[in-house]
Image (cartoon, rainbow, N blue to C red; front, side):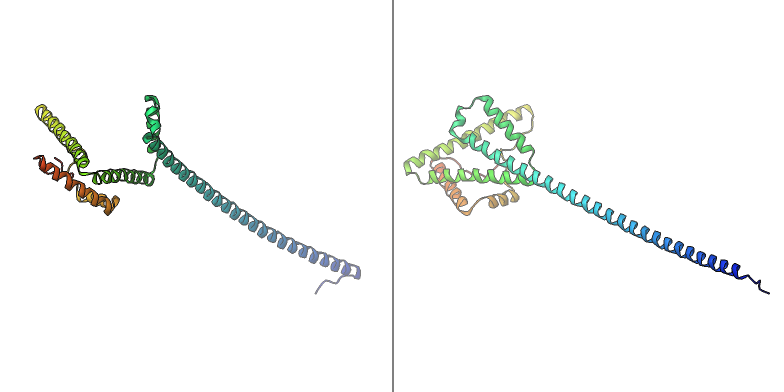
Amino acid sequence: MPKKYSRKEGKDWEKRKVQALFCRGCLQNNLRYNKGMETQTTNSISKSRSRIIAGLLLLILLLYFCYSATKWYWQRSALNEIATIQEAFQGEKAREWSKEEKKSSYERMQYLEKGLNKESKKELTDRNSRAGLKKLEVEFDRILHLEQKDKVIELDKWIDREEKSKQDRENQQALLRKQGKTIPPKNGGGPLSNQDLSNLLDVTTPELRAKFHQLVKEINQRRQGRKLPPWNPFSSE
């Protein structure tokens, strides 16, 4: 049989019941609040991490860009300075330079060349090749357009240089044979390979090749008049 409460006790029980329900509600609200705060904190930490990672990536990209830009600038500056030194060597003022000035400029150029990357070295080589070939073309034009009498004089100079060079090589080879040493090939490494010829075609123009062919033809005509064998510029002999 259920216990009976007095009116006063019943009111106290109802009051305690209400207080208990209120406390439970407060506890549930507090738990929900704490859970919400934890979620917000987790989201805040996640967002902070994302910002930090994004900032680090941006910093890395910025540093890489600065490094690449600095490297590119150094390469261009080095190529430009090398060109300036080369032009100075070919100028009239270079004749007035002392040995120390020439040595200093040459060493500076060597230092700059060592710091060039593969692409810059190729650019420098191509630039020097074009400059050298341009000089050759000017020289070919000069000889080919001379009066016949003056042209013969220039052709004889060319032939004499080749004959002297050939005689010097033969003397050196004879000395090396006598000493039992290996005979080095002609400057340039001997006969041109197919790759060498291909490279020549890449860096020369049809006009330059035509002028060279004409010059060789006239040199050999002059050599024939001097009872000398034909000259083959691509021979290792």
